[in-house]
Image (cartoon, rainbow, N blue to C red):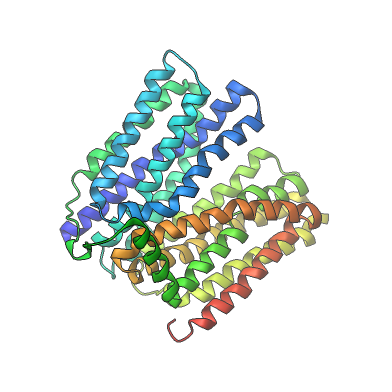
Length: 404
């Protein structure tokens, strides 16, 4: 058991160091591009062009990596990423090219998707069914903490030092992650290796597996709807309510994300130390409670608008903490459920397909929310979105009543 826990901690620390580096890079990169181009449109095109190919190929990544040793995949990913950042560092010492930056960023983005899926499956393999939720809670705590402090450190480094130094630090971070993961004791499960197979046969088999498992399929669809209706909060709903309607300054607006992150961090700690509360059994209640709070927050935006705007801002910050906490109470058991119930031999393909379909709906959700908000307001759109989620949750859980 001690050996298993050591492996889990090494993997979580490796992921944390990698995430810290990528978080700093992703906060600094748009600032750097904006500085050299002075054009928001160019920045938007750059990131859309970097992310689109990764989203498209993500559907096939699981089928590609499932036959390989997952530890070796994450080691190769971290080592290659470290080298690519180092190449950028060497290049930008003497030259400056947006095209070269784009190509390297695109490759890094694709590699990160391989790492994400391989590390999820490895996490399932080195855990037991009993410890999955506990260590997913610890992972949530670590990653949300990084998401809070990473942007702060990144913007400070960018304001204080040059872009080149940041590239060197990020490269070093990924190399440290690579060194940590070397000590994970893991052997590929030979029982899940299959003899005759082909890429397209395996791909179709992965889709058939999801379609034939009603519980997994319904939760799969639920995650897709969540991404469509809820993932647009940061881009559309929150700024639409606080900045556009309530005219809260952009500096204060940042506290909304910080408060949400603080709620997630608290929930991660609670899940890690919790021994009694079974979140999966309360998943329906948690889904509905979360959407109810969001509906209430949208309603309060309408009611409190005639009063001092900072009254609503204070309420918003408090609600964001609660929403961040409950969202983590939902996400951790949900991902743990997938890791428990999806057989290891299908997990690479499952997470790959989930990433493609749910991730692909995020930009559509942002587009939809932006369009609807321009007509009926961000707060009413917020209410509509979460009423839709409540209805979908009732439908999904009714279909799976005998299993949940």
